[in-house]
Length: 388
Image 1: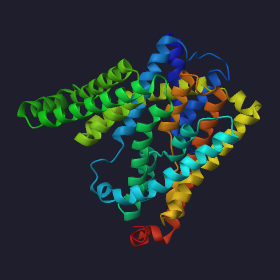
Image 2 (image 1 turned 30 degrees about the vertical axis):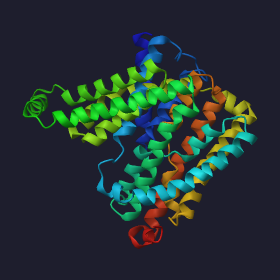
Image 3 (image 1 turned 45 degrees about the horizontal axis):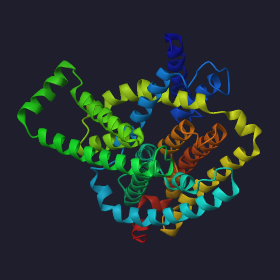
Image 4 (image 1 turned 120 degrees about the horizontal axis):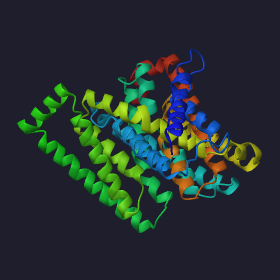
């Protein structure tokens, strides 16, 4: 690891915002970051070596911060979410059933013979992607938008919790103990933070921190994240649970606006782009092109994950566009590929297939937003009342 390689990785990370800012073709930021990693990684010039220890550790920190960001994006304090949880659970029940059926079927006909891994990929969603789209389309305050928010939030939380059990890199016992330990530590940290916020001395320190730019809220959040990550790794589970639960702490306690900007600077400014660049460097796109089985897997996953969400929406009597929006995903597939490659559960070609299907889901989300905006039913609450 050298400053030259670090500079190259940061430069690769800039490709994401440049591509995302194009006036017509505007893919998500992570697309450009992973594409740059592919060019300079295993598929391309081979300049970035993902297995280098320092770089691998930085990528793991980026992975934890990615899951932390996913956790903070959950609208856990939104009253509309709580009111819509029942309908969200109603939709997710259909989604889980369809995901298990599709997961078992694709495990028989593709080269990824892990039905539960495929099922998790089918059922998951991304609140971090869906929420901004709903807000931009002015749907987030409508009943339909709240139902979609509840749906993707439940899918997000459930798939992250289930993921260590289907991508086991230790014993199932370690995964269970690690999950319980992280859960207990999360609850304890959340309770302590709520308790100390009642004291004048803590409010005084936060005020001074704001005035003197100490970044106290950020330091506490990162301390929570790294303690949970240490606990998770010590017991033998994944940092993805630790990162996600630490983010959930921030979402539950209430995230100050300045903390959001601080997290944005640390996570999105360096570590998360580094993670996606290194992830792209690990992917072997040549295998996806040269091996028909990997290409078939990419196509099957693309059709399956969009189809499962659309079918669940229609069965719950929601508009077609809601299923397309809910199909968007990024964090969990990235976690599956990252952990799968590290533990040799996945081949580089299979990892490329999963990420290709993920990009298809992002495109489906964009189409779904346009469909809902153009649909007169999305502008009223009556269209959703029939789904309860």
